Length: 159
Image 1 (cartoon, rainbow, N blue to C red):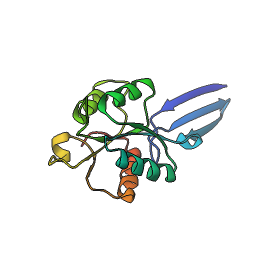
Image 2 (image 1 turned 90 degrees about the horizontal axis):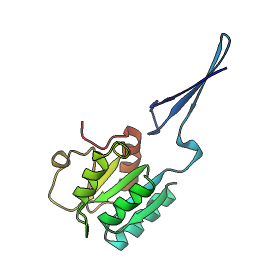
Image 3 (image 1 turned 90 degrees about the vertical axis):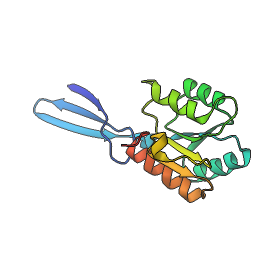
């Protein structure tokens, strides 16, 4: 019996794998993704009311949510247990959202993590070079749509 695990097959889920089983001339391909566990979203927002709103909306949409109130805490949480996606405000205490974004994309272990940038600042997605961008104020539905789209594409940089 020959077992091969091939990463990177992507459609609806950011991480999807194929397991190939061979027995003589017979071959069985089994595809599996993140259906067996809930995806974890790290919400990095200094406004506690917004964090609570985002947490509630994401939890109701079926995600596990971890929170950070500043950039330093976000970097610690990412280092300890990398999430499936980061929702990132740019204006944060201690360490800015821009620095958090740069740290995520600078390291091979974390650069695959999609980032949804949310800001009220007068900056564009093109300037930030991000694929998933929302300008405050946003509705819970807009947030959920952006998270799902960003997870589906698996990208955190503009093409």
